[in-house]
Amino acid sequence: MRTKPDIRFTPEAILFPVVLLLLLWLVLWYELRFGHNLSRYGVLPRQWTGLRGILFGPLLHSGLPHLWHNTIPVLVLSMALIYFYRRISWSVFIWIWLGAGVGTWLIGRSSYHIGMSGVIYGLVAFLFFKGIFARYYRLVALSLIVVFLYGSLIWGTLPLKDGISWEGHLSGFVVGFILALCFRESIPKPKLYIWQREDYNPEEDAFMRQFDEDGNFIETVREESQWVEDHTLGKTLPNDLIEKRPTGDRDVE
Image 1 (cartoon, rainbow, N blue to C red):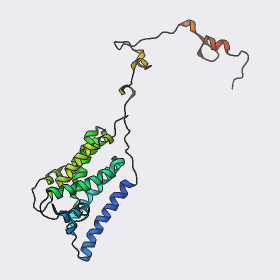
Image 2 (image 1 turned 135 degrees about the vertical axis):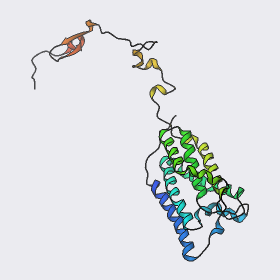
Image 3 (image 1 turned 90 degrees about the horizontal axis):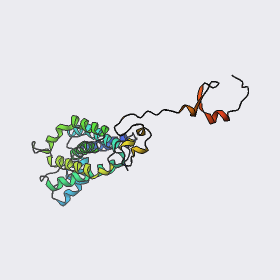
Image 4 (image 1 turned 30 degrees about the vertical axis):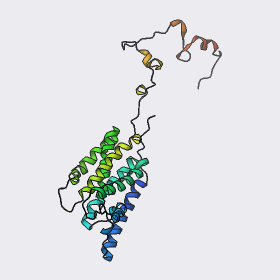
C-alpha cells in the first residue's frame, strides 16, 4: 500500500531548531562569560573519556565565528528535516548526532573534535539522497536546493585544511547517506491514478469500454422506439416514465 506524503507545517518545525540554537549559544555564552573551556568534553578519538564527546561535542564551539557559521545551516536543515520528514525526523536526527560522533571517535586524529558540523553534514547527505530516492517532485526539489546551498560542503570531507575536523564531516555525511537508504520504507510515494494501480482492469472501466481493441471510439446509437419526446417538460424521457407520469393541469410558477 502506498502512503501519502506527510508534508505539512507543524509548530515543532520552528520550535526545535530555535531551542537547539538557543542551547548552542547559551553554552558558548557560559564559556565566554565565566572563562571555562569545555573542549575537553568533545570527542577524543580512541580514548574512553572521549566517548562523552559523542553526546556533548556537537554542543561545543571554539568561538563566535565557529558557531555563527553553523547557526544558519542548523536552522535551515533541521527545519527542512522536520517539515518534509516529520514522522521520522527525530529518529534521523538522533542517529546522525550519535553516528557522526562514533565515526569521529573511530577514525579521527588524536585531538578534541567539537561543533555541529558533523550533524550538519549528516543532514545535508540525508536530505539530498532521500529526495533523490523518493522521486517525489517536492523532495527532489528539496535535494536540488540543498545542493545549491550546501553543495560546496563536500570539500569539507577531505583533509584539505589543518584544524578542521574533516573526520567528523565525513562521518556525518556517511551516516546521512546510510540513513537515507535505511528509511526507504518511509519515503512518501506519489499519488497513483486508477489506471496505474496493479488491480486495474480496463474491462471494468466505463470510459475504456467506449473504445475497441485498436483504440477506435465506439459510437452507440439509441433506438428510437425506447425514447419519446416530452414537449411539456422540454426533455427526453423513457416510455415507461411517460406512462407513469400523472396527467392533469399543473400550475406554473
